[in-house]
Length: 273
Image (cartoon, rainbow, N blue to C red; front, side, top):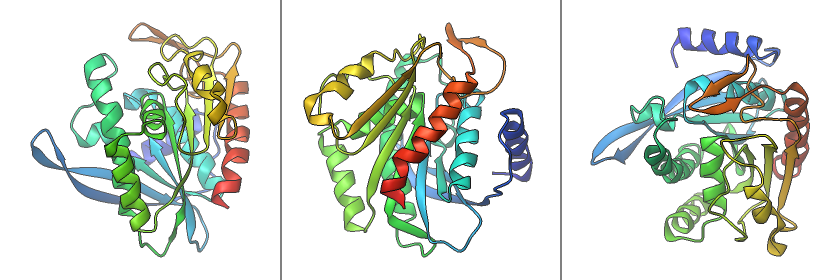
């Protein structure tokens, strides 16, 4: 990310009401991948908190547009303050896609592609002396959370092979946090790792009640925790004025956001510390 981009991110954090007291140290990592019959570079933004390390790492999966991802910037700052490094995946930007919120077909494509990017990102930090490869989690919001739920609830070759490859390199994905995900096609399938779902009851984009079946499956009782915030819309963790975005209501909810931080910190601690 450019210097101007870093300044812009800091300004956005301030607008979001998040103090930037835990200044992170940033590094860009480029991973060659195939996309639509050509080679591109998947850009990863690796940021470490202050301290000597090695650090547990939280992989960050963005939504369908940078405009909606102010909330993810604030989450990164929170994670740094808790002592975790972050590895933000630029899934759409690296593919030259930009804002895809209005394209249902492209969003469906990117759900599976971003899930694959989780493996690519995790492998990119394997063997680094400044990270703890057996202490890695994933956090996604909106489209990124859809990819995350797809990843943790799919018993298919792509996912299984990716997981085996990570384990062969000593990388262990311990837990996942999904913020306003769409669980429409998951139903009552078993998940593969501890999962925290944080959603808004008034979300008219990714309807929160669809995740209830996933959370209520008997085999998931010990693995899935879900909180649905009354009065909260899609993007409740995104500071700013309410907007109607591609026909969906997006509105900040300070109480839900602050509780989400508390719940995520409590949820991640046993797996990353």
